[in-house]
Amino acid sequence: MNFLAHCALAHDASNSWPAGEDLRDGLLAGAILADFGKGPVSAHMPIALQTGIRLHRRIDAFSNQQATIREVCATFPANLRRYAPIFLDILGDYYLSKSWDLYYDEPRHLFSQRCYAACAGFGDSLLGNSSLQLGKFLSYMRETDLLANYDKWQHVERGLHSVLRRLGQEALSQEVREAAIAQRDTGEAAFRIYFVDLRNQLPYWSALATTHQGSQS
Image 1 (tube, one colour):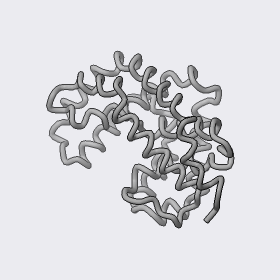
Image 2: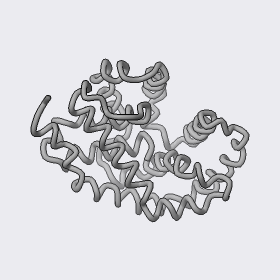
Image 3: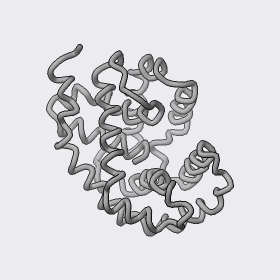
């Protein structure tokens, strides 16, 4: 899952978990922060933010083993398959953005503002435990209203290019672009299967919030 899907699932978790409303902003902020930090979750972060990062990681672990996702990844050209899960994450935000109204009543542009506000509310925690890259990305995300605009294909292509640049695989740009275009109009059916599957898993992961419910230490 990519940023929009992670934020949407974080919102769903806040609605389905005990005390989820108290965790909501941390879950939303963690949905974004987790992509910019590795290793143990810092115990110095607010509990709600810690829970958001752990939820993000649980979603990633589950989606990596999800049968439908693996099947779609197998349709990519052989030399791209090792990276296909990352490409599919970005495409997932495109599919979700296009079909948003099937899942949520709140308009995307309002939901996105809540996500940015959640990040701002945890600003010290976010920027204090991350690189300059994260701060720049959060500014870019808000300025372009990225979460509300993943239905615009240029954001997909920009995301794919950014991934290839980080991987040092920019030579694959044209091939990846062609593979993504091939998936653009055919991949949404599979997305609807695995996104609903993930949403259905969320109530079973409410133990991630146990620390919040039992202690603030």
